Length: 143
Image 1 (tube, helix red, strand yellow):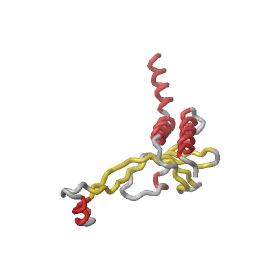
Image 2 (image 1 turned 135 degrees about the vertical axis):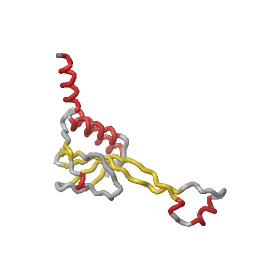
Image 3 (image 1 turned 45 degrees about the horizontal axis):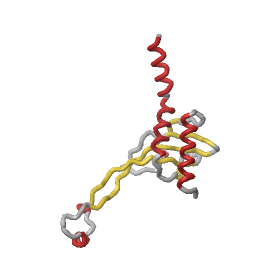
């Protein structure tokens, strides 16, 4: 498995190739992504590069966090048991980049890195056609 630096470098390369138009992304189907009913994801995008299928999307998930104890000693709270009332749920968002098979099944997921958010922003911008729209809009306004 590649080390973190190689993963970041690889994601950076995908980002650069996306920005320059070498890698072209398109909208993928949400129903091919493993998710629970509570998961909410952004529109997923897919592409093929170097004979590998890639998919990127943002996933929402909840994490169970133990509430701070109302008692003075944490040890006392340990006797309170594992009741749901002792926990809060926090919502987190995570950008997922994965290699998929030809049917959209995830084969491998890149480790969570901050640069994935930049990649997703670039993918959305390019796939939406925003650059062409802005260029046309500004060109029309000059006439």
